[in-house]
Amino acid sequence: MKPDIVVFGSLNVDFVVRTSRRPAAGETVLGTSFQVHPGGKGANQAVAAAKAGRGKVALVGKVGNDPFSATLLDSLSKAGVCLDLMERTSDAPTGTACITVDDHGENSIIVVPGANALCSRKDVDAARPLLREAKILLVQLEIPFDTVVYAVQVAREMGVTIILDPAPARPLPAELLSTVDIITPNEHEASVLTGREVVDIQSARVAAADLTSRGARCAVVKLGARGVVLSQNNTLDHIPGFEVPATDTTAAGDAFAGGLAAALVEGRSLGEACFFANAVAALSVTKPGAQSSMPCREEVEEFIFKGG
Ligand code: ADP
Image 1 (cartoon, protein in one colour):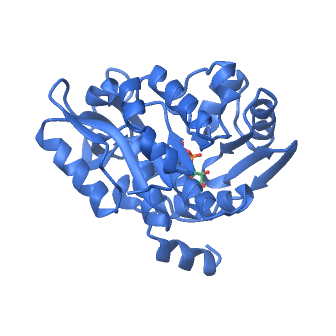
Image 2 (spheres, protein in one colour):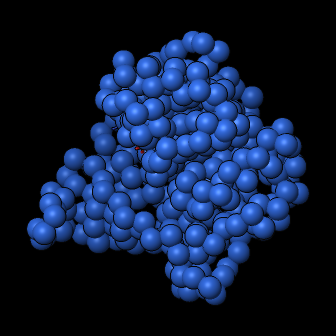
């Protein structure tokens, strides 16, 4: 298979608890439901791109040799994601994420990386033939940082467009920042990256401009329901989000990243791709779960056609 988009990243089983209010330290609250969903930023973004787009998507990553891995691989293949370079390892369990969602749809997440922590430079080298054919590499920070840096370096050598979703948040070396084409932090990640609090459109504009002035070719700062601020070619744009009833914002950022890659691979401009990705992400927050909440192309087109 010749993929258009290669996603290099994590797969996790999500254990999702719903509760009216998330507990404070030392507190116990009663939850209202418990569900198990396939997740992980890499897998979520691959599913989002495969469902919302027309391009071919491959995921490179690792799962454990345990029953959870089947749930994950099954969800990916149902979405049409190529798994030729997925590996099952006996050296670590499948990654897990414990997610608490409150009545406002806000979430708190603890990730235990497991097999994701074993993704190495060797796996990047094994993916070279796929990368050589690809137009876009999509990476996040749930696999070892050194592996991400190496994947970005290899993709750069091959002239592949690099989208970095810098989550979970951490400061990034200038060299990495100046190697990526598009960086897509949310408000918290943008605050960590720039050292300035990002809380609204105005502060997002400052952060986006800061990220491009520090070397990223384009920066897209995500602002939840308010959409995104885009910085490119010394220009700043606010691309508003769509108004929807939010049920569960888990993986909204992943839906956005997948939608962005899917639209770019079809030749849309970055502004148009952000608009499309806002629609994909808005639809995803109207449904519970991560991968199960990713909309298909027809849903996205109908939603956009109706004006959101
Ligand atoms: P993350 O999920 O990475 O924390 P955000 O919360 O900023 O990122 O959400 C990512 C994108 O998802 C937003 O830019 C927007 O397009 C969409 N989105 C998130 N929450 C909502 C919402 N309540 N209503 C509509 N769109 C939303």
